[in-house]
Length: 156
Image (tube, rainbow, N blue to C red):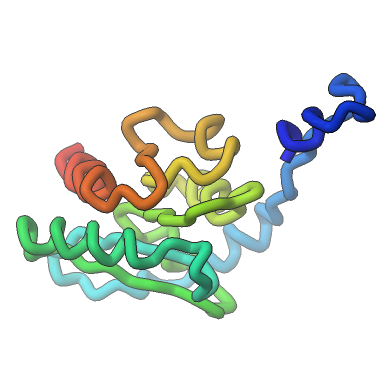
């Protein structure tokens, strides 16, 4: 958002500051204490958290997971939307995957990293580049590269 603002001629770039949305760390940690919601079935658990909206790019994730699951049947993908406690899922997931086309500042990304959960994300926000390593970032809409990143994280 900062980049968009500073392109406006009347705006002085030095006057534009970026403040991240704060995390309620106490609330996140309390909710993350709940029991593991995943079945203990030996699967690698991928997780997506968000609202069901076209901007979230779910078709990209679904196509990527089809590739991953075909090659590695002991994987599952859980989609969480409108859940009052996504943190118990984030804490116990093996990897959170963000498939968005665009994000201002991904709270889900920051929350998952706070809980120590590995994240793969599309290049949907400047925040992604600040918080993730290059091999964890894939081009928006590129389900093949997303599948490669998902399989790579399984090997770690």
